Amino acid sequence: MSATPKQLPSANRQFVLAARPVGMPKESDFSLVEAPIPALASGQILLRTLYLSVDPYMRGRMTGVRTYADPVNIGQVMVGGTVGKVVQSLNPQFQPGDVLSGYWGWQEYAVSDGGGLQKLDPNLAPVSTALGVLGMPGMTAYFGFRDICQPKPGETVVVSGAAGAVGSLVGQIAKIKGCRAVGIAGTDDKVAWLTRELGFDGAFNYKTTNDYVAKLKELCPQGIDCYFDNVGGPVTDAVLPLLNVKARISICGQISQYNAAKPEPGVRPYIYLLSKQCRAEGFIVRQFADRFPQGTAQMAQWMREGKLKYREHIIEGFENAPRALIGVLSGENTGKMLVRFAEA
Ligand SMILES: NC(=O)c1ccc[n+]([C@@H]2O[C@H](COP(=O)([O-])OP(=O)(O)OC[C@H]3O[C@@H](n4cnc5c(N)ncnc54)[C@H](OP(=O)(O)O)[C@@H]3O)[C@@H](O)[C@H]2O)c1
Image (cartoon, rainbow, N blue to C red; front, side):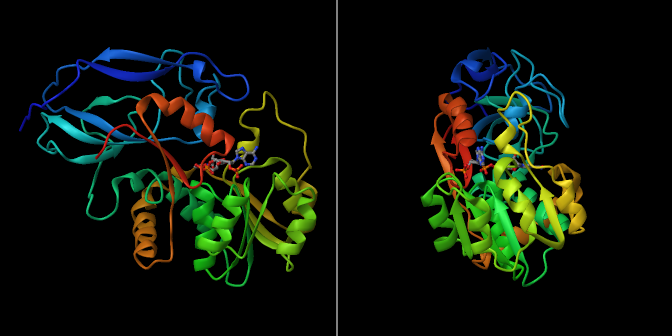
């Protein structure tokens, strides 16, 4: 049952939180430390991390405030979704070479009793997709859009953060559902990707557009029926006046506010929701966890049918994890931001 790996290093490299960031995180907010790799007890496995998922929510965990999850403490290993390979096993359910997804955070090795881990089949899809289109961001797009926006054919859907892991999938699902999809993103290359490769009907660069309302009016001549909000802030302020009667807003994220010390003043939304009888609903993806198998099956089917494309922005090397988080908060990524620690 046990296999001795050929070249296990003597120490496990980890990133721990060193300081609570003020504004945009800095690389010095993290410390690279080394911890011993413990000998396995019966029932345990040793995993070598292949991929780390880098997600905007990590910024929230770095503050000392509990939101819907506990914050990371100073000196604690940073949390995060991971994919890794079993290199040693004293657990009959796992064999060396098995590839698993889990949540063991920013470290090169992890010991686990197998709880909360999922076996991946590398023949079905690249294992990295368990952190993207077939993982948490994919489920966020699928359930957050489908359940909350309840899109109908012919409706106009606007997606902010449209070229990211979640947003790029939401726009494509909108097209699959027969809607008009309009995206908002932060570079011309992202806008071109959305309209030329992903089938969005329109998109614009919010960093080079002065009048968001005028641009949205041009791209959404029938008004807006569904708004999938990843960013909040001035972009969302511009969407509100263009909502149609009975429009639905899925409040997925507010990334424009994550580095702010206090909430930025903005438009008060209720008057728009009231006058157009709209519904705005926030969600946390894990509320849909019991239906994830259904969601991944549907996303995988759309991928096989060529209806759903995904892109990964892969940064090489464990030591670049802090830079990757700063990158995702700065818009460096197109599609899903990942760090590859080792080849599968
Ligand atoms: N509710 C949930 O359960 C749940 C689950 C997963 C994710 N989320 C949220 O969904 C959103 C997208 O997550 P993701 O993983 O797909 O990340 P992502 O979109 O792949 O990456 C974040 C993107 O946000 C954009 N951005 C950064 N600062 C911005 C600003 N000030 N204004 C507008 N856009 C800005 C950047 O793209 P640009 O170049 O376009 O600026 C960046 O690439 C985040 O807000 C995240 O917190 C929520």
